[in-house]
Length: 493
Image (cartoon, rainbow, N blue to C red; front, top):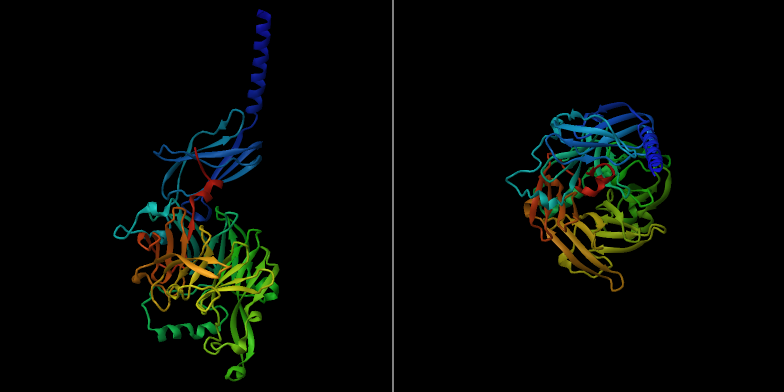
C-alpha cells in the first residue's frame, strides 16, 4: 500500500515538474511603451517574448480599484497592444500577462499619459447648460474638424475628449462608424465654415442657394479622398478620388458609407453639358447634378448611377434657377433591403434608388409618392437613415419654417402613406439652415446636431434638451459611438 502511495506521489511530482517546466519555458524579453501621434489618450505597448505565446495587459488608474485588461492576442513572439480611452496626464499601473496553464506575470510597472493637446482643451460641456451625462447612455459623440489639421474627436458625456485622430494635410468633413467597427472618413481641402445662422427672409434663402460657389465641382461640402481608420488610429487605406475611374469622379459630394460587404458608396458631383436654349436660355452650359459611385477599398469602380439619366431636363421648370446645383443631394444611406436612400435637398425629398437598375423607386416628401400631412413636410433635410424602430428618419432643417429638428416616418408602400412618428423640433435659437443630423440612441433619447450654431444636443423625443455640447468649429454632423464598440480593445476584470 505504501509503495503504491509513493508511486502515485512520484508520478504526481514528475507531472507537476514537467508542467512547471513547460509553463515557465517562456520569458518576456522586452516591454517598450510609446504614445503614437503624441495622443494623450492612447498608449502603445510592444512586447517581445522568446517564444510564441498569447498575452494580454492588465492596467488600472493610480488609486483606482477598477482594473481593465486587453483582449487575449493570438500566439506570436512580438505583440503590439494599444491601451485606449486613457485620461490625459494620469498615472497608470500595468502588467503583461503571458497566458499559460499558470499565468506568467511581469512585474507591476507604471507610466504617465501625456498632457492634453491645447487645441482640445475646450469647455465642451458647460454647467450653465443642460449637462446630464447619463442622457448620452454611456456613449460618446464623434465630431470632425474640416480645417487644418483635420481631426476626428470623440467626446464623452462629461465633456472630455476620450479619442482623437489627426491628419495634417487635409480636413475631415464627416466620419461614420462602419459595419465592422472602424471609422470611414471623408477628407476634403480646408474651407471656412462660420458659426452663425441668423434666420433670413425667404428671398435671401433662395439667393443663398444660387451662390456662384455652386458652379464649382467642390461645392460647399465636397471631399477629395476617403479613408478607413481603425480604433487604434491606424489608417487601413486611403483613396484619393482623382485616381478613381480615370479621374472621372474627383469629388465626393457630402457623404460616404460602407456597405455590409465592405464596398464603399459615395455621393458624387455629376455634370452634364446642356443646350440652355431648349428651356429659354442661351448656349451650351454645364449643369451640376449628383450621382452614386460604388467602389472597393482599392478604388476600383463597381457600379455608378447618374441622376441625369433619370431626369427630364427639358420638362424641368426649375432648371434655369438651379442649373449649377439642381438637386444638392446631401446624404446617403441604405434602406432595409440595401437599396439606396438619398436626401435631395432642393426637391425637399428623400429618394429611394435601386442599387442594380438605378431606377428611382419612390420619392418621400413634398410632391412625392406618399400621402402625408403637409404640416410634416420637411425642407433641405439631412442625415437620412432607417432608425432602430424601422422608420425613415431625417434631420429637418426646415429652411422655410426656420425651426430645425428630428423627424421620422413609418412608410407603407402598399397604401402609400407616410405616418409621422418622431417630431422633435429644437428651440428657434438652434435653427440651422445647412448641415445637421439626428439619430435615436439606445436609451431612446435623440442625438441632434445644429451645425450652424455649433451645438450638439441630446433631447427627448419631444425636443427637450437634456445635454448640450458646444463646438468651437462647425460640426457637419455628430454621430453616436456606443460603448460596446470598445469590447475588441478593452474589457473590465
